[in-house]
Image (cartoon, rainbow, N blue to C red):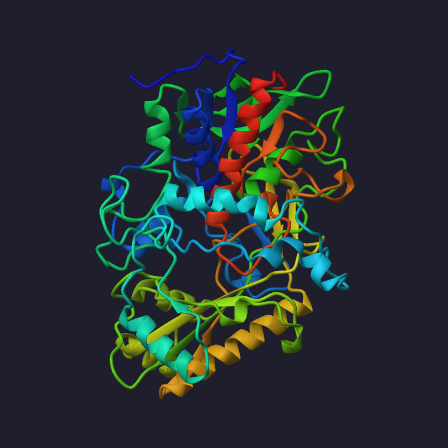
Length: 526
């Protein structure tokens, strides 16, 4: 029988969220004998629930509670209630992620020092360096089963989609071409099978070859007897005592009943939208602007990566849907080089969409109509695609705020997710689109076209790390500047976005935070 902790047990840590940050943290703490209760807003799924069906899985696992997409983006019109594509379920967005597991580059932790102030951007160095995080990157790679040196697993074989892109990349002079690193097994590892190359990574891996806390960290944490996971438990507010230290979390259970779990400490890991939303909703007489918000930075500096999709029709069939979805990365442009007209860098990541998703995302404004649209779909088997993942500069006005009057099913103010582009983002995106186009034209593409913006799964910032309390929300350990037993454990603590997919860094930070919490507990500080 699973461990059950009493609601009045004030010796447990309460972790809100069960994805890359929360799930990893719960497991790491459990291995140290530290008790936790994980509150997860969504359901618990089993591998048998995962289907190789794009829209069926989208409807099943996505966070579809009301949200408002705002800002001067096409996305505000085409997806007005879906600003981000994340998961509501045990395992969080580690069910949905692509498996790309890149480390930040050393200079990306000190971008402000490298480039100085940029008008309109809210740049800041991280309060930690690459060298400090590097041992935890190694741990994270072994923990997740990332292909490459740490795990000893070879990189993935190149699928047709990447062969096409890579050949074009070679012809334009690129050299850093790899099918990884990815947290998708290329041979059996950590009691999980190797990739079956089925091509449905983003819908959830039904074989378990891709790392997800859903079937790794969460059940293993529970098996220790030191962790209880409560699905369908939507955190509403965090409470504190008269000294301002957090001591409980109020949540709605599956039947909508309000419950109150006492806590020794609280770790917030609900993604860059829900984490700041919870802190803002937890305002009180002592913290009238929300918890941990003396700087006014909670909810600000929302980043999604500067992204774009480019597809090409090739003369012969490519069948991009076959094989691992994102197993092909070109990193030549990830460097810091201001001569290109922008700061930060980007990666080119081969990408495939199944026909159902592609048909929607290719023309979201018009719903798919006309001869040109039909002509592209008729050549679906000839298509190759690439996704540009670039540094997205933090801007104070990009962020999460609470609607004045609209409430969700829990009675909470609906979040407004505002995102606009900095001119640097636009310059980077244009460069990436041109380079992708050049790659495809170099191998004889019949036509090359851009796919409009669609909801990204990369959401970072909004509770950022800072050395000084007045510049951010948490310190180098993810601990709130204002409240010493409140932590942020997800991607919302990112100070900058880097040019890399965020999951590996979230896991590395969670492992590091677990060590810090254990040390403080051993000293009687928590």
